[in-house]
Picture 1 (cartoon, rainbow, N blue to C red):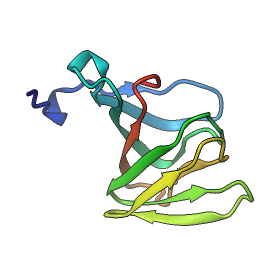
Picture 2 (picture 1 turned 60 degrees about the vertical axis):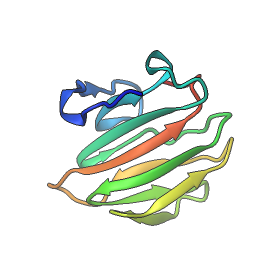
Picture 3 (picture 1 turned 135 degrees about the vertical axis):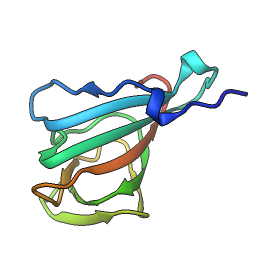
Amino acid sequence: MKIVKQSEVVKQTVEMEGVKGVQRQLMIGSKDGAPNFSFRIFTIHGNGHTPYHTHEFEHVNYALKGKGYIVDADGNENEFNEGDFAIIPPNEKHQFRNASKFKKFAMICAVTKDYE
């Protein structure tokens, strides 16, 4: 067994094309003995967003704090707020956006271990 305290995991700034104001924490992954998945927390600052992208695996998301949107393949902003779950199927274009100009939006993203 391993217990990880969020307050002790360093937030890393996500630096890639199409990203604005996003930090990532790898909470649990293969280094912790999880052979099949990893759990990451993304904090998206005011007016921030992830890239508009696709990938070959599904992921499950849980909104921890704040209000956000998941932009779908047609460009629609779907509300994704504190307490909501979402699944993004493989190869589906998507983007996560913070709905606030000033407050943080935080979510858990669970993926296969190959994408830590």
